[in-house]
Image (cartoon, rainbow, N blue to C red; front, side, top):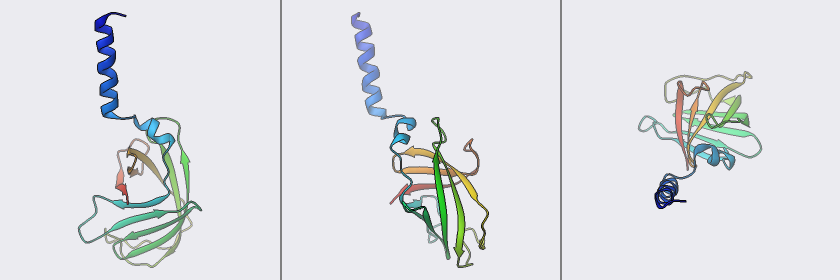
Length: 139
């Protein structure tokens, strides 16, 4: 191997170390379980999601309090990394941060999970990531 090829290989490895692993690598170790908070929420109007390992989800959005069940499926490919589907089981019928009142429903509500970093995700209505409704960070 020539000196220029060795130098090029070292530069590539140094840049890769600075950038970190690609989302597909991070996705292998990703877990939705935990507390998440929206970073783009209206000031004074928290939006928090709590996923537990038993498939239960709690949502706080403004005055709204929801309980739901959820399933999470990993997707093969770099983006999106997964699909989460929730079914609301309880609602306090109060307005969320957008002023909407969500009522009790047994209809599954799917969303696609896009990994931005190990502790930051985006939830979107579509698999292309064009209709996103929350950017969440792990609390």
